[in-house]
Amino acid sequence: MAEPGTRAAEAVADRGWRLRHLPVLVVASVVMAAVAAVAGGLARGADGALGAAAGVAVTAASYTLTTVVLAWADARDPQLVLPFGVGVYIAKMTLLGGVMVLVASTGWPGLVPFALGIAAGVVIWTGVHIWWLATVHARRVHT
Image 1 (cartoon, rainbow, N blue to C red):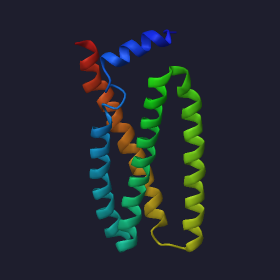
Image 2 (cartoon, rainbow, N blue to C red):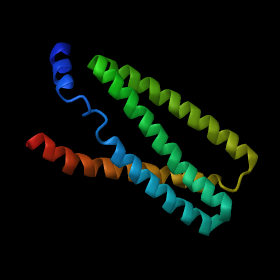
Image 3 (tube, one colour):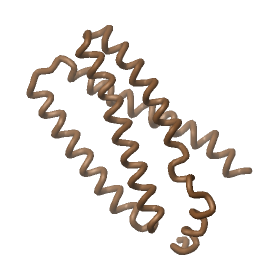
Image 4 (cartoon, rainbow, N blue to C red):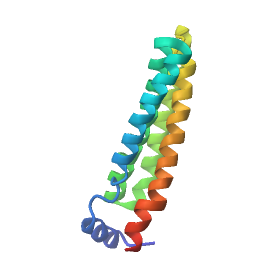
């Protein structure tokens, strides 16, 4: 395990490495939200369009929050990553579960497109992140 001082020196040399992938992932999520809105609109009208786009947006916001919190924790001390990561995960899942229960209780017709938008957002974010790590980041590491 690297000493905190060693890790801090590496981080100072390349301050942006923890968040460098974020713009690419956010742009991919915005594109996916637009596609989801069109698909949701065709399937269920305005409620479907809103639900699908909102589902992708919720996923992107959730992953962005996690990325920023973990980058902050890692910049302070790598040993903070696990407790902050678990804490943010528990808070996000509790909030998302509560929102889903509240929305489901209203009978809103956009609930199914919302859930499908969340799933689509997860697939897009994860896929683009894997692509970024395998191509863009891998080139930086090996040069």
